[in-house]
Amino acid sequence: MLAFLTLLLPAAVYLRAVQAGRSVHPEPVTIKPARMRRMVDRAPKSDLRPQDRQLLANILEGVVGQVAREHEMLKANERPSPFVRLVPQVPIPPDGPQHSWFGGNPSLPEGTSWPILGGKPAAFLAQIDCAALPADLWGGAGPRNGWLSFFLGYENGYLAARILHTRSYGAPAEPPFPIEFEWLSLHEVPGTDWTSLVRKDVPKWPVAVVRVPSKVQDPRVRTKPGSDDESDPRFLRYHTGFDLNEPGWKPFDAASTLLMLDTATAHAREMAGRRRRNLDKAAKTLDQLATQPERFDNPNTARKWAEDEKARSARSMAAWDACLSHAGALRAAAEREIASGSRLEALIDDLITTLAEITIPDGNDARPTSAFPTRCPPEAAACWLTSWATLAQHHATFLYAADPAALPPAWRTRVEKQVAHDAQREMGSMRDVPDGYVHEFAMGQDVTLLQLPTSRLMNWIWGDTYDLVLTIGKADLDRGDFGRVKVQITN
Image 1 (cartoon, rainbow, N blue to C red):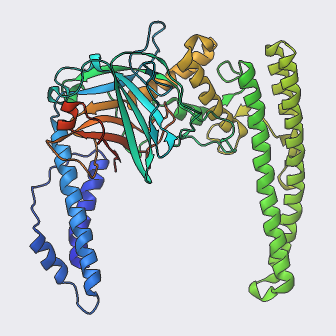
Image 2: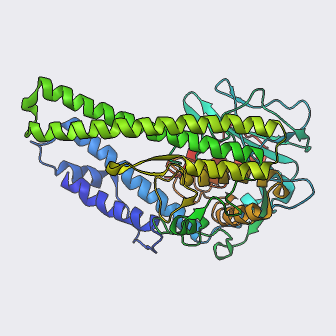
Image 3: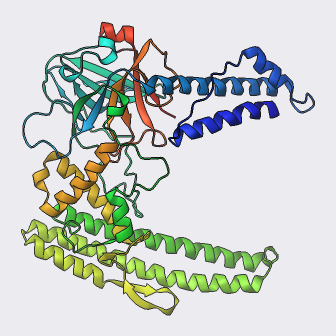
């Protein structure tokens, strides 16, 4: 085991240094299988069974192989061949057809069948204009006319891809039935149950196909792992707070008005549920004190805590249940008002005022405080407005992607700052060697057909916030055979 750790720990330190963005130049090391066997065989024979020793040898061989492969990939990308960045466009071009894009739906020639994976319609990822691909990408292999459309799904329990190469642009296509995008993530998870309050697809975002001649000319902005990105508007919002009545935060259309009330309702439901769980915990403690007092070091102290917690939780739960009922009634009334053609701006102001007037007891002294305050204080963690900020941004971003002019100026300015920040850091690529480690990749024989990062802009997530990588054999790419594309996630 000591020998195993002796080799594993330097490998771990090396990988951690690489992930942290530090410059590392390890000396080339070749560890032959015979040497690995000798190292493992030095372990005390009384402590390890033969099958355990073999397991350690296999793990060690895998770790060493992974480190060597990642080092090889890093070296290849220090001076990469010219590659392509797929750059999300911000601001979105006002007119004209979009030739390449992420998300939304593809444009396919009439009669083209939607790809099926695992018996289900595959999820559409991107469509790229091959005419925009530089001649020297992939050493000249691959098509330079028509469009490549990328789809993702599962087959036999594993990630799988389908790629269509169509010669003509075609009309916007719809899947045979609606698809829930399985890789959806808001990244900023609201404190409420958000799953019923957001769309289950991803926006359609135009991208520019940009040739990158060298690594130093890469337009992608990289943020160091674990560091606070102070240029992120989310960072500013968290540290300064905001007011619901400010332009750029106040609801601006019927959908955002109802979303505000849905957020308030979900918050009240969540808070009432927490109090109910606390009440159940206190009641369970009292039952245990009645039947098994010996389980407690100080039964009297435990009983006093449980009785106080039960009374406090019951009072707070009742207050939040009343808030839930009030918010639900407001939502129903607002929907009727909107349907009747009431003036929306005045309705929004009245709703915000009414929400702010709904109160709950504050702590043990039962002083009333607003259940739905209009001001989100700096660094607030449990304010209903933090959920509103996430959900409203999601709603507004979809509108911006479809038509920037659909947003009022204050909203458009704020959303555009956020999506511009994200777009600079969340570019896709088409290249030779993947940017990051993947297990199955034959250097010199395979190329990276498409690499997509986990993205706040697109609301998709790959693994634990890594990259999705589609690779193909260069010989297959030369023949236009996309039937053996490998799908992996960097790690």
